[in-house]
Image (tube, rainbow, N blue to C red; front, side, top):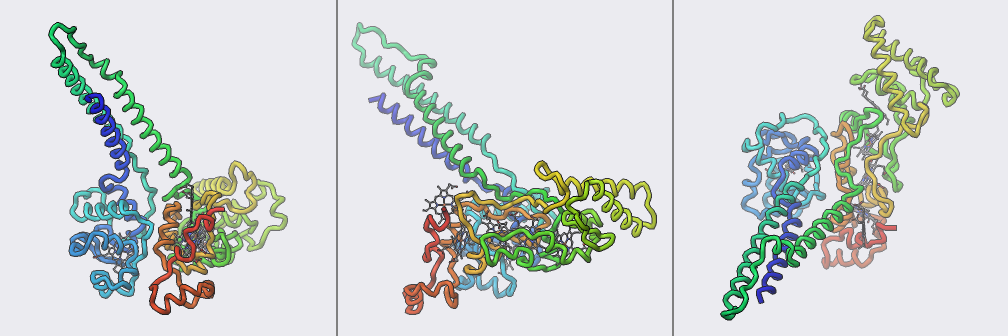
Length: 474
Ligand code: HEC
Ligand code: HEC
Ligand code: HEC
Ligand code: HEC
Ligand code: HEC
Ligand code: HEC
């Protein structure tokens, strides 16, 4: 009887253990994570002091302002404010009337936990409890890599407490056992043996519990790591040229598709070749930020001599020292033009600019300066997944920013979305396809009929087959 009880207790404990380890990842809101999310997603429109209005309203105290509605409403607002405005939600409509025509971006990829983190961070800054670390209001959003959340210490502490608990319980049960035996013992019987702590610790029940817990913990971390492997939300590598989207797509308002013209008509968006840069930089040869240092890398890659404004013949055959001569002359001339003479500082500058140019255009696998600029790839789906830009940009009529975030505000591009399967699926479940007047959907007669006679009010990507495995997997 008691043995059964012991076993059940251990089972219960194991279950408790599994549950708590499983929940540890969802835990209390993480203000630091919220800060990173806020800075990367919200900071360019909402002031960082949470008290002043910017492009969007001050967010301090926002949960209070939404207190009349269920918590999910505020979450849906953040995920898709326009959807809520269109649906006529009173609070959403009120906000829109005050702030239109400025549209807030949709953030469908944010999980409940992430939104909770952002809201906690907003509240922390607003109430001053997250005080010392706040930033000044305004300014371009600075991208920071999301710090990996590490809950190992917590897990260890938890495991420790559970083990102590298990031992204590085992001890109690063992004592009970002993007492029962003592009671049942007939007079004259040999006194029952009372178990020592070592015996308890090495008993089957305790060992089974420890093994079971280890298996659960191991399995949990392995699966988790396997899923996270290869994913790199927030990834922001340093690029060979300090190319800024904030300058080009933001300040200069160059259309994304001017450079990424593949997005409209093919699977890939394509990184522009140096020729595209030359459309402008054949004329813009000295930048206001880095002078000759960065723009010259375009020339050295493609073989353009900025001193003579000509493309160099047989550039591919030139030796490194010949290239060095051409560009050191260009650096020197520009320096003299600016300063009137070439002093020691000038010599030093020319040397560092040349060394940096060489390092940027070569790497372990590319020994020559000549040839395409090797940008570091940021977004990368695994080979077994199929993604097509034209399908989303041309057919789906989605903005680049829906998936890539506020690129026009990024000095350096980072991966904005998780690129996980859940991310694709979620959007396919939620997004209505632009069904009316879209040639692509002409063949879906049934949906057109149902829409016409009011049987359905929308068609989502899911409805047109967007959740079928083979659409996304080879
Ligand atoms: C492109 C600018 C922009 C970005 C980026 C942006 N917002 Fe907004 N936000 C607005 C505007 C504008 C409004 C006012 C309503 C409207 O015009 O749609 C607003 C309103 C809100 C409101 C309602 C405020 C209230 O007083 O009830 C919340 C909450 C909110 N935003 C949260 C966020 C969060 C969280 C993020 C980042 C994940 C974010 N916003 C990113 C522009 C933006
Ligand atoms: C003047 C040309 C130019 C314009 C305009 C431009 N880009 Fe880019 N884009 C580049 C170059 C060059 C790179 C590679 C270097 C880098 O990552 O910064 C790049 C990289 C990217 C990447 C990362 C690619 C990867 O490696 O995964 C994304 C996403 C992107 N651009 C989106 C956009 C969006 C969205 C816009 C419009 C808001 C835009 N770009 C406008 C030139 C441009
Ligand atoms: C449509 C015109 C246009 C195109 C195309 C273009 N740029 Fe620019 N770029 C500009 C302008 C304008 C500036 C701002 C110049 C300044 O800072 O004075 C600039 C600035 C820069 C700077 C900063 C220079 C500095 O020192 O401040 C770099 C680096 C740069 N571009 C690289 C590139 C690269 C690489 C490409 C091709 C992928 C490219 N640009 C394509 C117009 C363009
Ligand atoms: C529906 C989401 C979505 C939209 C909308 C979207 N992209 Fe992408 N983009 C992705 C994904 C996913 C990848 C990774 C693709 C891969 O690894 O095969 C990617 C990759 C890229 C790359 C890296 C090169 C490549 O093609 O793999 C660039 C550049 C890029 N996108 C630019 C853009 C531009 C510019 C737009 C708007 C015209 C845009 N994207 C619209 C999801 C999107
Ligand atoms: C922001 C929303 C969004 C995200 C994120 C997104 N999609 Fe889509 N997707 C759409 C829309 C809208 C369409 C509708 C266009 C169409 O019908 O072809 C679509 C269509 C598709 C289709 C064609 C479906 C069909 O039945 O014709 C495929 C395949 C696809 N997406 C793959 C992906 C993959 C893979 C990812 C993740 C890497 C992804 N999508 C992420 C919005 C999204
Ligand atoms: C809308 C596109 C889409 C659909 C539909 C889809 N997948 Fe995926 N799937 C992906 C993407 C993208 C990844 C890569 C995720 C990553 O790198 O983390 C993936 C990854 C996977 C993985 C690897 C494990 C993982 O999470 O990385 C498996 C297994 C898988 N999918 C099975 C399926 C099955 C089974 C179905 C049908 C029920 C399906 N997928 C439908 C886009 C899709």
